[in-house]
Image (cartoon, rainbow over all chains, first blue to last red; front, side, top):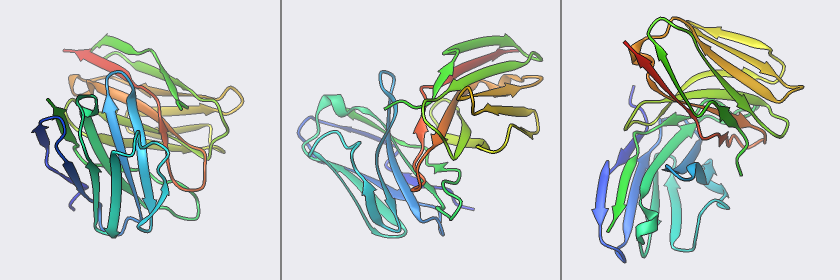
Length: 116
Length: 111
């Protein structure tokens, strides 16, 4: 079975450029989460979607960050313009939200983003 | 905001020994989950324990939950070098499926 697929795995770009990270969740999952991981701050939840609808984006650090989920099988996280402090590993995860609450989340292998 | 806090931050043991990691949290929960992260990889779900459960086993893993103390522990028995990884607890407190992760315990198992 295919897991959560993220692309690209690595991205190096210059400050000011637009960065787009992509995620394909596991088929049948109805919740999708974007996280950022750094040594200093650990794993931070940026935004999550249920049934393609954004539920909580309070973790998005600034207006430079935006996320979309146009359909159940695809989501993007965009940073425009990018800054060096955005350098981190960005993870996408998906799960099935049922009547009994949160279920285990399945993570992709992340995108390692470096902004020079 | 940080919900789960793991303790210790780092743990180094010999192969064959048991490893115990602890997690404390602040608010009431629906369930608590443990995850493992190998270097350069995403997190992998290990085990989920619901708020009405006190103990759960999965292979060499044993998880306990004490809701009165708002704490959980993960015990890995007979550790192996392949268990070397970071371990995170995560709490589910709402109705939307989102989790709050702690900062993790870095476990090193020496052969």
